[in-house]
Amino acid sequence: MASERIERMAVEVEGEGPAVIMLHGLGGSSNTFTPQMGVFAGRYRSIRPDLPGSARSPLPRSLSMDLIVERILAMAAALGVERAHFLGHSLGTILCQRIAVRAPKLVASLALFGPLTEPPGPARTALEARAKLAKEGGEAAMTEIADAIVKAATASATKERQPVVLAAVRESLMRQSGEGYGATCAALAVAVAADASQITCPTLLVTGEDDVVAPPSVTRGLAEKISGARAHVLPRCGHWTTFEAAEEVNRLLKDFMSMQR
Image 1 (cartoon, rainbow, N blue to C red):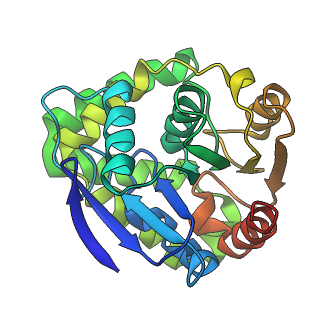
Image 2: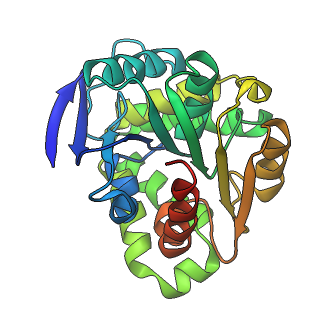
Image 3: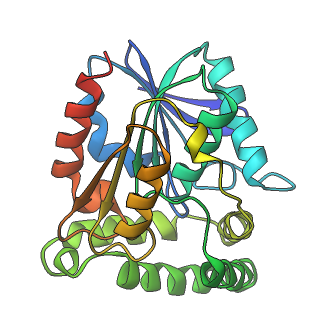
């Protein structure tokens, strides 16, 4: 595995074969997809950036969803990728949809976990408030935010049976800078949905039955807009799908990817 700096992003690149680009969500990093790496080992070239302003990637002067999409497209070009399978989690699913609409020849397939189209009204207000708290409150604020998200966005079964998952989610959030996390919250707060009806590639949609951020109703509604999309709801799983239900996610991914080759 090589850790590279591409388009001012920290990017993990591993393996040979068809490209798979993995885009994490708010408060995530390239490690969001660590539990899935075994699915692609030895058969694919996996590309996992820390998005601008997240984890090890510096915050641009002005962060927006459009800027992140531009950086991802430029990263793919810099790596010589002409076609790739895209995986996304949460905010990353919004980016994947935008890329699929904007550059359909680049996107071979989509696998979206905790999929979102755009934040609903109340979520936009909450994101704006969280952005202010993160930017102004420093490390103490990020501790408060991390604890709140672990409590609200993971399933009861995860809290009872998977303490390592809780630690991974909390650590992912605690490793974010307040400025970067706040700027990402602000960018997400004004995100506008892509026209999902224009997405024509094979698409897998997966959410948890206890996901309060991307509930099953949203996933099913998105599946209705994307021709041929497959939607799955995982029991006893919250929003951090790739961590909370890694075995189920990997099984679905293996089946889905086997049909793309």
